[in-house]
Image (cartoon, rainbow, N blue to C red; front, side, top):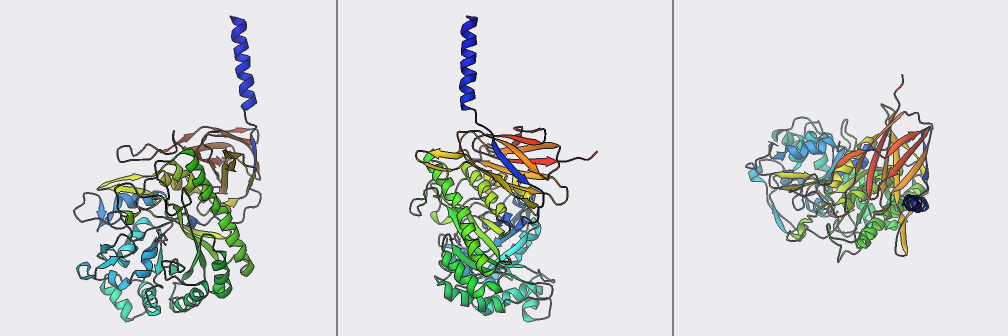
Length: 519
Ligand code: AHR
């Protein structure tokens, strides 16, 4: 009997040894960090679409939630916690049909319009310029306003900037004062149109470049309020658009945008469900998400041709997962649930942006509340934080930190005859405390992956970590079970000599903190 047990034990150990993975070697270079990961990479986007603004941030007087005016303060608190650095508004496609003067003055006198882009619903303009800027002040973030090029005029945009940013006496600034705001807001980030190749006017790149110059010229810099003008950029892999804009107007912009959405199926006609998908569709989603690496690299290479000093920022001001809407909801409202899969997309995309921080200096996830890859979902006076929210919570440590290059060969995540890199990583060093933060995403739902890391030029003594994972990729936070997918402490990292050893569980996002405490 003893012999038999011994034989079984030896066999088990031998089988384990055969399948045990050799740790992947990871190098993190902290010897000469120079580039800062702009906090604006962690920006968000809130459009007049579905229940993002109305019945999202902005609720009825009678709703039983903490409010300032009609702004929900439970949402504000949640956004403050993840340090939202900027908020893009009012669109999206909505921006190119929005006439800002309809959204100022006494609310009961504001004109109503039809939101032709999003469900054909009535827009009462009760949430306008003052309300948006109040929201930004409450969150403590910078406003990023998209002006109307598609159906507006140069004068309309010029006057909006004057209304917001001038402290001189003029008719515009007098109206602002009558509406309750004495001092200018000094809004910095200014989008000149949105998707001008599509819903923003169906223009050619050459035509838009000329329009951009007209609008951008008269959107003036006022006293102490220099504008960061942002041109409407390419749709995914439209490299010609970036080339034409950089060639014709590159010297006149602070940033140029890029929009790219991750569709589970890659097919706009049948995008796939947010909650019901198999491993094959999961694999496709992650493969489509990883296209961001190629997009950012190739758009940056074109920008380098005209702007080798990297003065112009690549602003990825719309990104995220786009699925079918939740069954039974208005198709024009783009309401979708958010699963562990979305969290893995968010972690991966943010790692890509961090690792391209020399050029990518701003980005905005679409869209904050109740729309597309949302951070927050609401039902009446209830609210929940999605798995994607928790990734932004984990990654906030990278905001304005010094970027540290990482080097490793990722194992493959293989399905049938196709493969993608299983792991992506980014790292940074806090400028104030010197702590090092490393964010890992293991996309592989079936394999643990171990790392043995050499940290060049980094003094550290302790490692702690946090993890976001769940049993199933389809797991979500629901109103019945709002903490189903949540952050928990991570114990799979340790120090061995000078090396950092990490055992990364399948389908997980992990952020480590390495600290040095001098005696
Ligand atoms: O985010 C939803 C829509 O997607 C935006 O309004 C538009 O810019 C893009 O096509």
